[in-house]
Image (cartoon, rainbow, N blue to C red; front, side, top):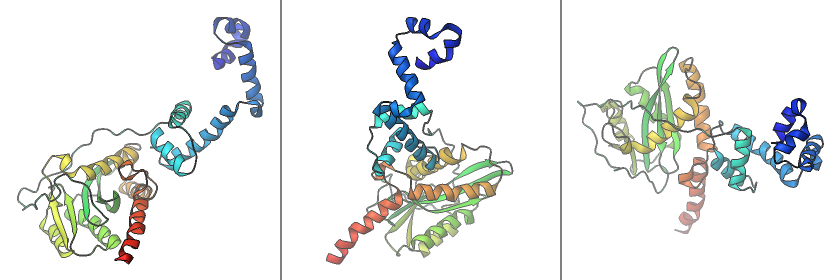
Length: 300
């Protein structure tokens, strides 16, 4: 209402507007004084100014995808004590909001002529430690030069992305490259690790299955056309599409997608707060596991 008075006082005068609106002259004068000299503002108003700067920083540092809940969580991790409702109020005031996921399109083409491994996961996407269960899937991205494809391998324990690859074609070597990156980065011990995917022809190919067995990894595959059977991989890919791809459609080239993907992966792994693992980044959750397990190993 104060802003309305200021906008229309030249046409109607401040006093006539105040008589119509429930605004006391003292309130209007105090507001004008605060704008002229911020030091005269109330403690709450001064704190709001400080909080808005911190909220905007957190929002911008996280791909502008965090809503009020995650901005509030991140501020708490930084030692900024503020109520969640205050963050919600100030984000509305600044016009900031999080990204909302939409419906995804399936890309799985079943390899009907290929023998498929059994489903060893049965929709139980939980792991007691890193390098026990990986899930993998890929998606497509429209560019001015045609479709490109992005594959991911995710460690289920902390939902950390351990392998990814961008390609112009969805061939077997493309998903194998993502697997090879994960193997090089994680160097899992042979035995004790399961890799789960859908029944797409790339993932159940003989070449791909042989590489898994050579690395001592147990292959697992869900059913066709059922996202629940590979739900965790679908979730991570959905986040990637919502937070990166859909915000810049159409993309110019494979190179543009290739540049944006590792940037997002690094943010996801090291700074993104994930509620299912305790509102912390995947890398932090893994580091905490190893820190807590070392004393137990030494004691044994």
